[in-house]
Length: 181
Image (cartoon, rainbow, N blue to C red; front, side, top):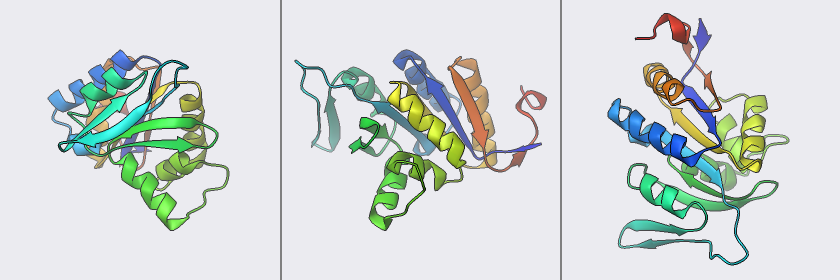
């Protein structure tokens, strides 16, 4: 038995993350439990920007097309410049977790606001630190946080999309391979 109510996947490829989000939606995962984070690497010639127009968020940058497709599925969006990581584009409840950390001036020793946001939902500090390092290396994070059943169903979907890695965190459940359908 292990504990899980969150699953976090690391991906080098935007296409894998986008496919995983679409697969999660098809599997019936509530899109309000899904978050994405990606570091933006501004180009010397390209504009990087984020704005709202007619109740729709718009983003220009290296990951603009990717987030344009995702933002139609996932609610809450933001762009934060996070010390030690750089500009990070976010979608999903991770936005509110980070805002709560910033507004509350909560300190999680050695973690950025992003890592502290993850730690605030029960992800161990060492794992949150690994996820920060993944973002620094221009990898994407896909996070699903919800009930233990939601996390387990999401883990099955994410496992099938062949991300670089994924981890489960939280409430007690049987091993993933014991309940695989």
